[in-house]
Length: 163
Image 1 (cartoon, rainbow, N blue to C red):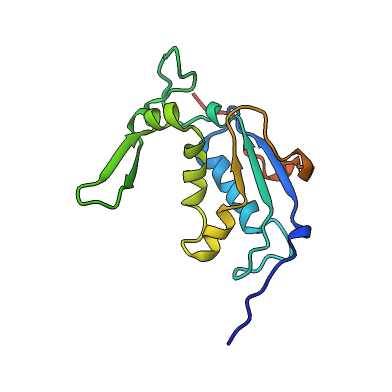
Image 2: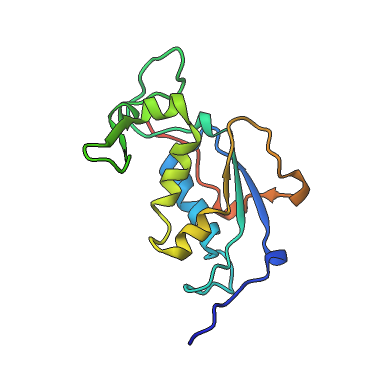
């Protein structure tokens, strides 16, 4: 029987990134890269060698698309009004669908975590990698004792939206 390979938890780095003004998908791809460990030379597909990521200001994330004027939602776009997030309660007829605007109003952290979750492997290893993602509304987080470093500069996506 094969042994489960374990990575030393002390060797994991903690990175912090401010999501203010970033586009959801572009930010999520970079975060997924760090969670999987693909930014390290020791990357192995069947071992979780990734680092932990803290995302701040998730309520100020952006979607692409034409902007729409709105008083409560500064970054409202046409794509945000059309995008749907579905979940299933487990009961017959229990499919619940929310738009990105409704999700942003109730739980803005779900926009980032769902985008990252969909970019990770769909197996036990992917679920383990997702546990290393911490998403917070605002700039405060309880992980100061881990001494988080700034997100690697070569992995930070461009904030500019054309148009």
